[in-house]
Length: 583
Image 1 (cartoon, one colour):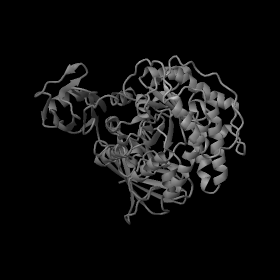
Image 2: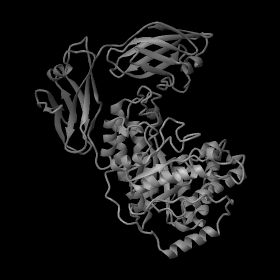
Image 3: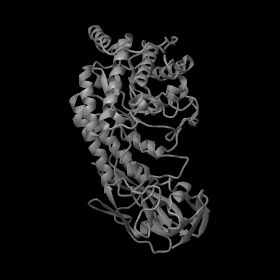
Image 4: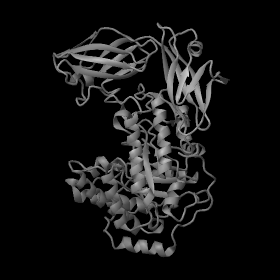
């Protein structure tokens, strides 16, 4: 995701024939692969529109930026449409290309279309479908990555207790994939294994198994010849984790293979408490920001500055956006996350692939579900954007309106002023600026609040470059909760939100212990332990939450709202009955 790209020209063949022969020779004397049946040939797309391949691997990977994931599709279990997406189409890739993406990652789960015993034959119909989807993307001039995806936890994770069978199946799987795509353009890349994980192992043991699989993958593909002798191959760290220890092991493995056509791959979903809204992680605060900057600093120091290309195969937030549930992450905080992500990735020289399971692009309409969010992501491909300490100013309906102040973060740009729609607000009368402090006057906020009905009016701060920062002026009053009863299926608390929005819930017992399924923090996980139901004026305590409560022990809940308001509620479970009271 960074900018648009030119119509690609002719492709080159990468390293010369001598290097290709040397690589094939190295592969031939490596590990022996499991014999697998030949796969029926598939007529691949014309090379007329294929991307130009650079001589250096890092230049090719750089040309793949930005990238996008066809998530929850060919990786879905058991079939392509099982996880709610429609069948992939050529029009889908036309859209991705038109939106400025230069490459796509097509995750593939093979296990449901493969015999689980030797010779581990992949169903020809499934292989042909994968080839068809790959060819559609290639025909649009996109680079393409395919992999072995959810197989990682379905059967590869058993390697510690079923080593020989797992290794044999892994090699047989890649033998068949390599044969099917042997003559495909080198704009196609192979990725060894998605998020490698191994049951009941230490990190040291997991690193050993991951190295063994990466080596087997490398040998099987290289010895298959044809375009595979020089095809770019992606090797993941254990768990695709970018921690220093994991990166060091991956670098050592790549050096041992002594192959210039290798790419490192990791994933990034942010500081966990913020990514899922747990443990009070409601904001993209200094801790979450440092976690991101430290991650990219490690990647830059350990990999890209050493000439090792990096493809960040998945990024985003673990639970946002999700248009089937209330938003766990406040939209302005998410925008700040993606804004900094774009900057950090560019500074580190990393190619990034947005994980899109269904939540960004509506696969049925081929329209972005949240244009403002995707605009921020796209803007980050080329420049920074200014932000502020918040995108919301809450005005209590019951109080007099007074001036309110936000802290600007111009990110290297100049502040140009405030606008409401096409009308520019007057500096001095509507707002003042002192250093990085932006103050909206009482007069301006009174005008923006209008008749003071519950809800939002908006203005925006504009900067010399990048996107404007929207400021949502919201009229609210303190939410009002009511008594309720329920059972172990959950409790529905009647709630008048009155223009406010829920941020998090704190749950404790009288003895100071934490109440709820997440016992290491009082702040429970949004949408897992509790959830707002704005249309039906309710707060929901989930079955997961109420079933975790101690029988007969009253739990005190404190609901925190984005206005700063709080509401205290008390819940007691007695056998299968649950009672909730206000205050």
